[in-house]
Image 1 (cartoon, rainbow over the protein chains, first blue to last red):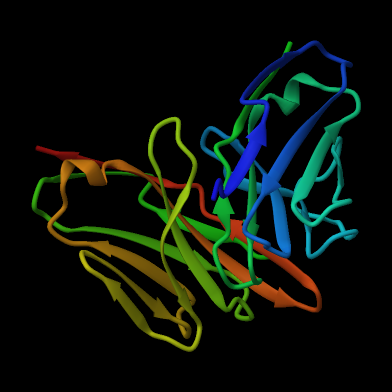
Image 2 (cartoon, chains in turn yellow, red):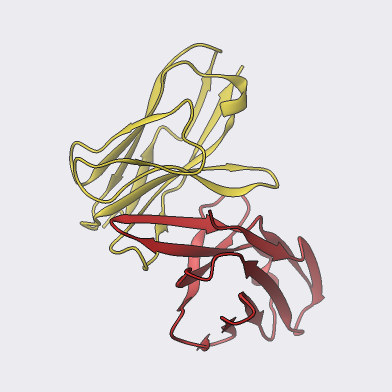
Length: 112
Length: 114
């Protein structure tokens, strides 16, 4: 039981490049989330999904897109990376709106 | 939207003493309050949570209290140990039709001095 996994662990991008972060969970959770963590800012919700085929905006959605084509996967895309998107990105999942969520190990992204 | 304030931002205690971290929330509709512990370079880990129909919950050395009237909740760690040193985050969630948004505080860095 791997829990929540994220790929890649580290990535460096140049301004304007695009990339996709992959999150996978093997707990059969309905709810999945993408957060970003910046020093002194806590964890801020980017996008979330309440089930396969659904997505919704969180607190800081601008510059990001997501897809949930399979229940176990939640993808976060950056179409044109900006230095302001340098952050640590955490994926998380939960079995209900009031349980957990459980976090993945994170992806450290640097945009030059 | 919901706003969660967390205090203090840093806290140092002697090993064996107690530590208390406090959070306030703005939306009275919030009904779920988890606490996370994050060690340096690691993922946040859920350590305890409480729902709005409960006033207090305890798990060994960790307890959480909730005051719905005052809209604040607190984490209490007793008999602190060096391995309790970490950043702790509180959070609050508002229920919604098919939606779920968890708002986090900005964290408290706890240092336990041996």
